[in-house]
Image (tube, rainbow, N blue to C red; front, side, top):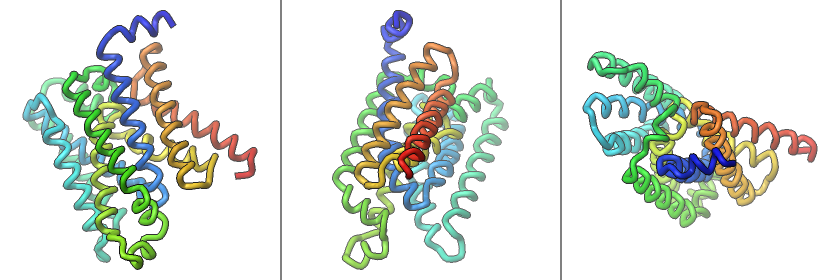
Length: 276
């Protein structure tokens, strides 16, 4: 505890904890509808797009890469949603095409530009090894503002998101603009992906979206209870993972995902004992 309190005296550690908790909370809220809609893989696809945009921002030596990464990721989310409704190209194929292309071109651009320490930049972007501990105060405030926007939008549109998640055809039949709310889900997911890049890296983002949701589903069957439980489990796992990472000196992103996996294992055992 003495070592932990000594670490907490440093601003960058407090910044990391704030951003980590907020990002985990937002990812869990959107993770439930994405998992139920069988669309959770969009997180992995958009994370690769964000990686490609991050590589471009690194080559351009942008001090605030979110200015470039966020718009590109949001546009890609809209493109995946629009193109995925085409009968000629299914949604999973669109995600695979865009994600693989972005990942390949991003790494190619970074290598062709003769950027120094390419391997270090790529490792940090893919696995979030050190970026969460180098956040500036401006980046923290941007994360806080974007997280609050995501939470407010989710709460205000909770009933519509619930309807679109469980029965999109019925929601459309009663007059709900399903395209609008699917677009809202995609855009919010893109924002969460960009926020989570600094936390766990682009390759591990899907874990923040999937694991809390399926862990909560092992404990509850009510949508509201699952949503609340997923948020609580995600925040707890992120906080515990970051504390363990700071004390043990392990990579932040990998440690948080390991904590999520451990939480899922515990929830699975509890659910199995309860007959779920």
